[in-house]
Amino acid sequence: MVQHLTVVDHPLVQHKLTLMRKKTTSTVEF
Image (cartoon, rainbow, N blue to C red; front, side, top):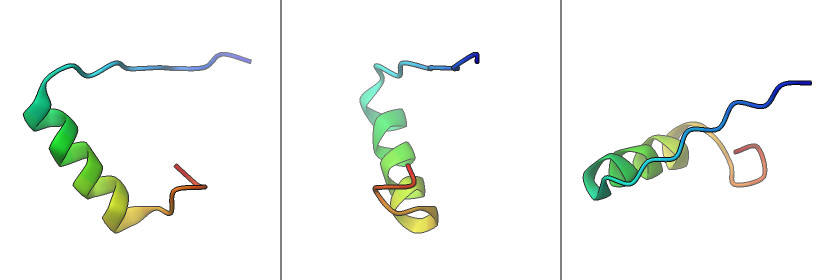
């Protein structure tokens, strides 16, 4: 099984990803 992991270091990108996560998935699903 291959796992894909992307590490994002840019603060603005992290903020946008957090907003998307909150809108579309629960913490458990994410």
